[in-house]
Length: 363
Image 1: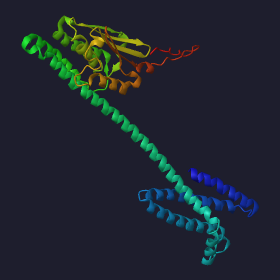
Image 2 (image 1 turned 180 degrees about the horizontal axis):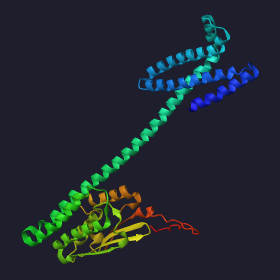
Image 3 (image 1 turned 90 degrees about the vertical axis):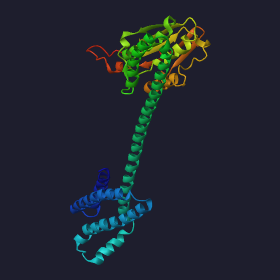
Image 4 (image 1 turned 180 degrees about the vertical axis):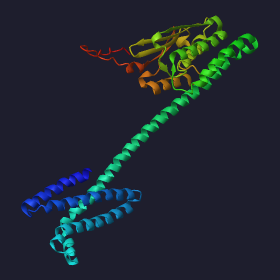
């Protein structure tokens, strides 16, 4: 339609000057309109022809368009002859031949340009469509890679956690059957949560906290009074969505390397606080801290905290990675996320009052 519109302007200007300075007859405009209609039909046919040729090799496409230019020139030249000479009484083959020979001068470029411009527009459209398709495929591939990465990280954490939990109760099998049965009962809930974490991407923080409490209960059966647990959770954060099993490796890290190796034990503190739409998480202990043999990762396989860091960055961006602080008085791991649900609750401005601007929140 754009090409037809462009040639409609050209035909109108050309017909006007011909009517004004050469042939002051109205049929000049009717002839121009007829040629324009024929050209628009050919533009559609040229698009279809180019689309069909595009499936072949470049050599075949070049040969096809060379044939197309020749046929286009013959048909449009004949139509031009019909409106300019034939209707004037020049009806014999010799007249047509003479007219077509005259067109082989500069006038022939007019028809060649019409074909070439139409084909060029088709290939430009096809090129940009290809770029858009590549961008869509690239975006889809990036999304799929991200999902596969997250799935892989989760699949690494779950067996690692289950193995370490089973290892935690292995010492109780012979020493205390009652305690072993109690641990297995607690472990069933943990198994269910760990396996169900594959079903959905996110869980409520309240569910994750319950899971952590079950895990701590199992560890307290093993360590007794040497392991204490304190939590400080902002009630407004309980319904936020977080990735499942995102806190467990941090707590396990404190248990295994902060508390277990300390003769008198210690306390693990879990805090979740809100500052505007920023949710701040911290897991810390008063265990061995920097004096521990290993403080960077809570897993024997080396996937616990490293995978937690990658999962956080995959879900919430690179700024939400883990921050580790260790000294002689203990060990702390923290991270923050942005509560997206607060963005959905827009403040509707009332009459006479402007929309309240959000305050800048500290990071």
